Each structure stands twice: as C-alpha cells, then as structure tokens.
Length: 192
Image 1 (tube, rainbow, N blue to C red):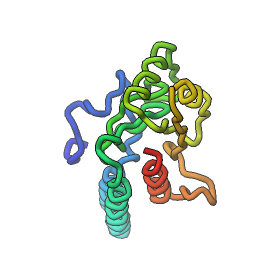
Image 2 (image 1 turned 90 degrees about the horizontal axis):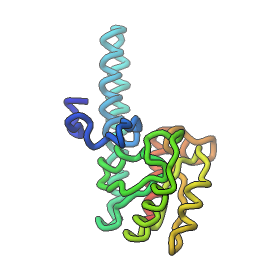
Image 3 (image 1 turned 45 degrees about the vertical axis):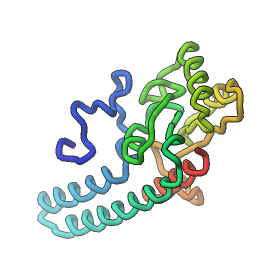
Image 4 (image 1 turned 60 degrees about the horizontal axis):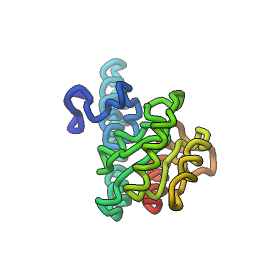
C-alpha cells in the first residue's frame, strides 16, 4: 500500500469515523496492482512462473477495465460527482474515479452499525441542499432505511442498488469481478 500511487498517509482518505473502509476492491487500479503482486509472489513461493504470467495477464486486463470505467463515468459533470450511499463502502471508488462522498445512511463502513435520527435528518438536509438524485445501496442489503430517507426528501430520489461486497448470480451482469465493476459504473452513470 505504501508504494501505491493512490496511497495516503495513515489512510486519511479511507478512515470513516474511526472505521477503516475495507472495500479497496472497488478501485479497479488497486485490484490490478494486487493481481500482479499476487502472481509474482505465488511464482516466487512455488517456483511456477505460470502464476506470474497469469498475474500479469489479469493486471493488464484490469488496467484496461479501469480505463473503461473512467470513460464510462467521464460524462458525469464535476458538480454532480457527489455520492450518498447506504454505508461508507465507496471511499476507494470515490477517490479513484473523482467523486465526493457527501453522506451515508449508516455512517459507518459496516452495514451492522445504526444511524441516529439526528444523522438521518442531517443526511436528508444534505441531499436536499446538494440536490443529490440517488442513494446507492448494496444489492445484498435491505434498502428500507435508504427508501425511508429518499421518501423524506422534498424531491424524487432514486434508491439504486450496486454490487458492493459480492458478485451477482448468473444472469445479473455481475458474475465476475470485471462484470461487477462494469455493471456498477454503468448503473451509477445514468443515476447521477
């Protein structure tokens, strides 16, 4: 991490109220770097150079995907690059692709945490003030609280599900990591 071009001192951009954001895989460039490192390490540990070749192949594929996602999201104007999510899972995604995290229904990196009524009132105010058109949620988590927040805002706010912590089932368009990230970018882009 220290040698990563996206690294920051003491993880300052990834610290959410004392909670470290573990969702680094939502930054495809980090996954590309990881693929190369893992392939090289496996090759060194096993003596089988095929691991390094595979790591390099996956790294290149992910670098191409990273550029594709940048291009997909490029049409979103800078002033619209503000995210509200169900929990603080998109810090790495936001940092990599030029978004600002402006709020979360549950102000934690964990979906097990709870939001207070004051937190929710503040979030509703933020959404109204910044005219945020969507709340992004984890497809594997209930959306009742995000739906309630959206209903309290003085204009139509979509609740949009993204693949955050798992791949999708067959037919979902998110069966592989690459498909998941492509699907998330394509789903995010028209919602903002």
